[in-house]
Amino acid sequence: MAVLAALVCAHAHAGVTVTLIDLPIAGSPRILDVRPDGAIATLVTIPGGNGVYDIISNALPNSVGGRCSPLARNALAFAANGIAVVLVDRLNYDHPSILQWLWNRDGIPVWPSGGSAATQAAINATAAIEPAVPSGVVVFSPVGGAGDAAAVTGPALIIYHTSDSPSNADASGVYSGFSSASTRQLVAFSGGSDADCNGPHLLWGLDVEFVATVTSFIAQNNPSVPAAGPTAVEYFNAGFGHYFMTADADEIAGLDAGAYNFAFARTGRQFSVRDAPGAGTVPVCRFFTTPGHFGTRSSHFYTADPVECEGVKTYPDWQYEKIAFHIGVPAAGVCPGGTTPVYRMFNNGQTGAPNHRFTTDLALYQQFTTTLNWSAEGIAFCAPP
Image 1: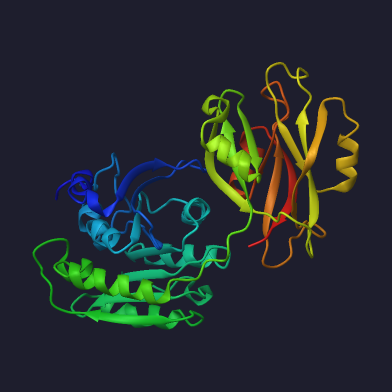
Image 2 (image 1 turned 45 degrees about the vertical axis):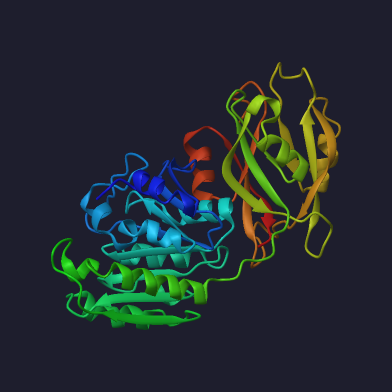
């Protein structure tokens, strides 16, 4: 099969970008992102079989999984229909974190997809990200049980081949497992070819039918995306070794355009905030280190605790800047339903200057505070949807 990069050149008019990304999240999982301009959704395919796509460049993997997966081999066909395809390199990755990262970056619904040995991984990842991330799930040639299907509330599509055993026996059980799905559809294929890729099991020779079925289901059932509100975007300054976040639209535009000699790069992480007072929110104070107190390094600090805010205003190392945004806060250490915990951690001055990081990723928070010598400071905010 021709490399994907070459195929993209041949379809340049479609406005498709192919990007190899080692994600800036725990474990640095690798993905191949095949993305058309104006994509309406992202299909995220998890490898079955031996659990590896073996992505080494911006080309379609030559592994059996990469060559045979109906999602991978039809990536450009989906892109031509306005649907991005992301190949996740390994079955054993933290898939919910990858899906969250894609949603944070793109703001369009994500649709985990897996078949055979990846059936439960796709289903369980979907259940894990709902309702925070608008999503649906596509399962093909399912093998084994339905996993966490009963917890999935979005749309679910199950495809199988009538000549494929055991998926033709397991498909109805998986379909039944999606008992809480907003809509569910079970589609049986027949025909195709036995020429390659385990024939019916991976729907060989049925590419047109597969793409049409999945595309139609997504077009009809793509979850709505909440109206965009202000977002706190995270950046990393490699020269300082510091993390920085801002919800200021002008500041975000400036940093993205290369302010400070491109010293700040997006990490791909962000969370929602409010730009005005509202029910269940409090103001967040923003501080900046006093120039010269930490050499050439600088940092920002945020707090929603009014007592802490007033206290920091008296510290000579910090200068009060402004109310940065408004947001919810935990009660007795727990965020209200429908909001997302934002954890705060402190670098203990390891860089020669103080730096705090804020994240919605509990695994990342635990990694930094257990193996990277950062102090755990608990839940700082409760981000709205």
